[in-house]
Length: 230
Image (tube, rainbow, N blue to C red; front, side, top):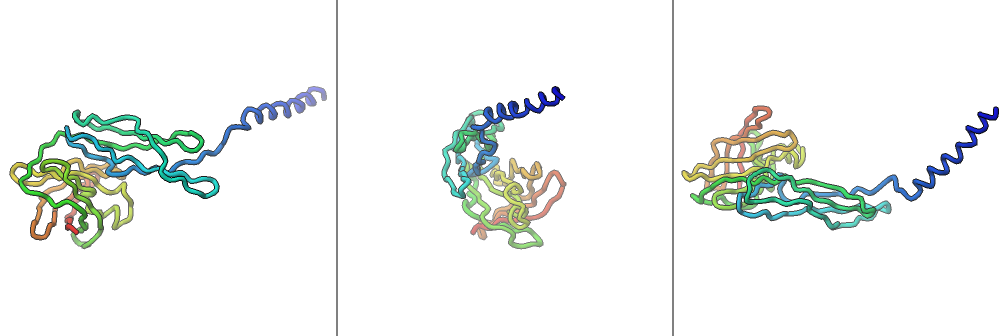
């Protein structure tokens, strides 16, 4: 009986020590919302320099308030003179100084384009054969001589029409060859971890339309799309 009494007598002491050690430690810490701005993956042409669009971060308090525009730190850089794939990491600390991280992929590519003609830059509407208009706001921007970024080689079909979200767009680039033929490079769908290729790219200057056949490599599935300048 004395042994049993001694065991129970130790319980308050053990719990008392544990309470003292953990009384100042928070078991729940607010997780900030972090959004990568600009393209991800992002294409940088060798030698053109890396202009970081950065991120946006905000935090939600227990009282239901929002703390906007949190400061962030970029932990590494991109050498735009050395081709390769870089992972850029951003860090945000919440109100309790707990760090959180988000990444961006930056592809530095050594590709040569030619200004045989100009692709119009700006916002395009996306169309798919058999479906018609499927998306808005597909962007085409000039990166350097004869090379243009395109926000979604899939013309917004999966991101917008099916509503799968940004992970199912296929950012890439258009390259104008010396003979005036347009090709695409670096098309990739993060949601399926799949390359995206194109064929028979045609630009109609009368209608400002870019049309082509697009292929999802992981499924070996192709369909025709076109982009029409808004």
